[in-house]
Image (cartoon, rainbow, N blue to C red; front, side):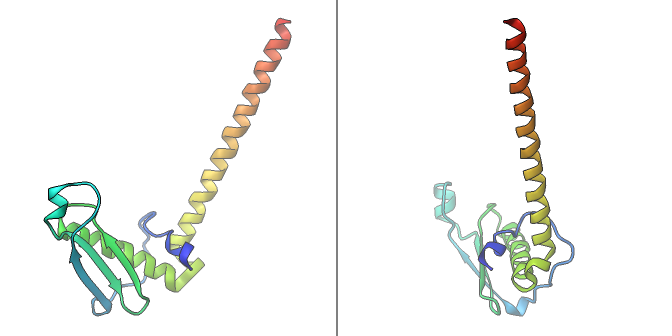
Length: 128
């Protein structure tokens, strides 16, 4: 189920399982990465744990604690939905659909490249 959890945070899904605040454990820690003093002195990174499933989300996307709390809850909600529903989850279905579109786009690009290559070869033959 680990690859399934990586599908979370792809798009906004409507039919997700609700999170119960009593089942959440929230901590505020110092973030990591670039930012220098702004990162090193403030505890605006949110670590959110869903106790029943054991899923942990760490969010340090903005400097605002409130925005990070909101984003962390959205990500956790999607991951919990994937954890319990698996392949029936809307998040998983969206990820599969996006992968299919990407593969189709790659296939069309490859076909176009082959056509161009063939066209250039024919032009070379016409010149000779």
